[in-house]
Image (tube, rainbow, N blue to C red; front, side, top):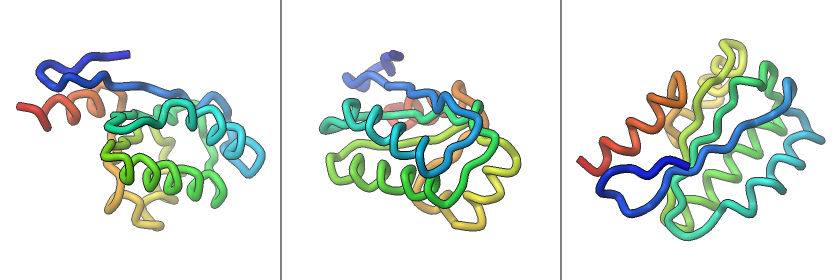
Length: 115
């Protein structure tokens, strides 16, 4: 857990641990992440292990973002493989969720919001 200077709220980092984020894995991931979703949560979803993301994985990320938004929090994703990033861009996820290249960039983006 990283503490952003001046923000008062920690930045939580969750790692997508599977190579494929498909229907079964997306359901497991959503269940694991549900415990982290609290009012004001600032969450980075580190996706570098997930080389392949299908529509179920995409839906899981969008559902996660909606739940976090409703609670006044924020989600950033990072580490997308080139293939997954292209899929997210075609689906225009970047209009709703910040897509960062790596974990450091995602954390800096949270910190900049409080500068």
